Length: 328
Image (tube, rainbow, N blue to C red; front, top):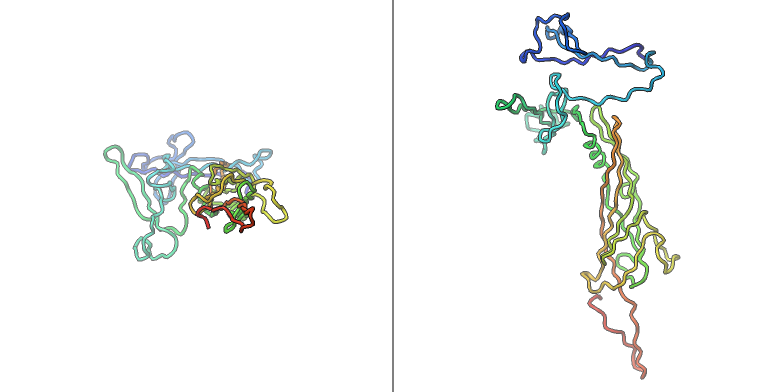
């Protein structure tokens, strides 16, 4: 383990063309607070550097103090502060010195921008240069084997990537009476959904770019059942599956009773929709946290009839059932 103080120099190379740097600058010359001039043998010039002393693991000077949280990355263009995001151009990359956005759709592999590669992605690298009337867009194309080192100032972007990786699915709807069966007016209808990781949770996924990672966990909080007769039932749990041993009883946690038959409706059935409400919590490696809510929906139909009385001829004729509606 390293001991003492590790001296970290964040080199801010300042272009001579804008007068910040001159080859004849003396290292003894006054520098702005927090900066100093250091000779760079590669460029043959002095460069202005920002010095920072960061306690490292095992440093006696850091004993008794909790470890420092990682600092949020900053965006810089030749040492000057830069907005980390641009709605039109994407997120800023300090190494590429431009805003990066993945080209969609990706060009064919015959395109020279691939430089002979058949993996990775082609990214647009763009920034604005100049000011006022002289401002113009400087852009180029970059092939990268993976994600660029873009500084995502809002980790919510990665939270949504993590959610997309979950591939949340529609609820698996079940009912009694089920599809192809006929229930009765004023008799109990049982409703439930099957639990899987992608339809109920909990499910956890992460999304990462260099320097930042977000982990999200999703869980269904409730199912809202729209019963097709104007009623909506909110079931906090998945519901209880029905079996014959239950008899003619109401569901203990998720059920309904229809007041009218469905014979006058389209398909002679009530359209039923189950909407799963997912609650999602996320946390980034930089300490940011948040809550999100998304929904997934599935549909089914319930056919409800009436108990048909049998009319008996008092003179001994054949029993006659009253005429039914248009449902067979």
